[in-house]
Image (tube, rainbow, N blue to C red; front, side, top):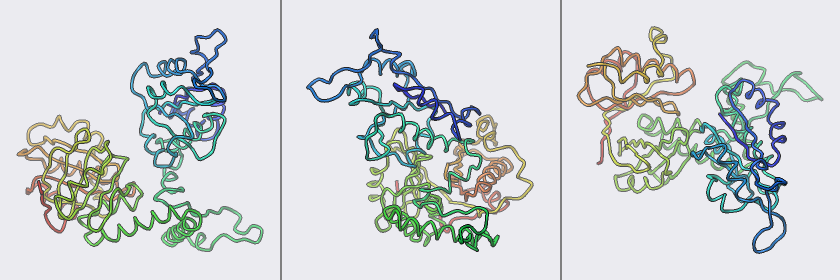
Amino acid sequence: MRFHVMTLFPEMIVQGVSTSITGRAIEQNLISVNAVNIRDFSKDKHHKVDDYTYGGGAGMLLQAQPVYDAWESITGGKQVRCVYLTPQGRTFSQSMAKELAKEEEVIFLCGHYEGIDERVLDEIVTDRVSIGDYVLTGGELPAMVMIDAISRLVPGVLNNEDSAQTESFHNDLLEYPQYSRPEEWHGKSVPEVLLSGNHKNICAWRLDESKKRTEAIRPDLYEKYLQKEKLIKQLSKSKRNHIHMMESLARGLASVIYAKGKNILLYNDDCKVGYLTAENEEIAKELLGYLPGEAEQLYTCGEVGEQVVCEKGKFKSYQKLCLCLYTQKLSLPVRYKDIRSIEDMTDSFGAFEGKHMIAQVAVQADGGICLTYEKGVEADVEVLKSLLASASNRLVRNGYTPYLYYLPEDSTIETVQKELGFYVADKKVTCFS
């Protein structure tokens, strides 16, 4: 991932990110940080980049032209996410860090003095972000804070990939207390449960401590956690129809957009997928308007069981689903573990000929397998087993519960289902379009 920082103090940025985890990530070419000096683009012989504000007032303002030229030197005019660090922006959060970590490159614009000419901000800035309700002398420290938080979510940056999934704010809970050697220090002992070796009890203790700490320190977060737990319990009454919604909530991968009675809309911003369960067609269609504009797909279940295909923010077509399948958190038979990876399969699925042709294979970020076929094409049993086993084993190793939607109702899929031990939904789902 590439970070660019437009600043008056490039040496401050370079020194700040060259140590610890970000420094190691730079050395390993997992991230790069390019500090661009705005003064280098001044047309003034003294490299002056500020001037008085029109209308009067205290302080100086960064001029538009050097800022724009610095931005253009980075982008070449192409579209790149540009973050302006300002107290007037929306507050930076872990969810925003996750969102920005999916970009290939991000530009940070650091303001100084009384700010920056509004005209250039309107032209180049995509996001205005604040790291808190206080005022700093410039945007360099906030830029480094954001680079640090985002970098930790880039694959390979953390030695332990589980760290990002167990720390504070994951699933709206603060992190539990932790202990190291010695077992006793200043008369205080490590909790006995952590010395027991019983992983189940340790997990239960950590969850309980996280809840206690969150309730005491951040009651606002704790209230969000309780709301999600209540939804999971409600959805569990029809677990097989709502398994993907429950998994997304439990793993902190989905935010609640709407929840009232049986009408629930979730959104997973990692894979830009919405999940909806509603009492009837009219309510379902009304709730579509609550989805973010960048949503690419929507899965509905329960009484309104259909896959809605989204194109450029507009849901335009409906595909009927015949059955919903999902697996337990168990590895599949050993003989399927060493087959081609799902990435290899997805890269070449279009090359299958005749009965081997598969129209679409995709793995969702929240652990779901979505597999569809071209209508009327007979799928080869061994090819399907390889695809499903490869994808399922990879997801199971990462702790997810895979599930499968498919369109045709035929003997091929029944054979695969029996051989691989997939579970079938209680009933066929229907399409209301």
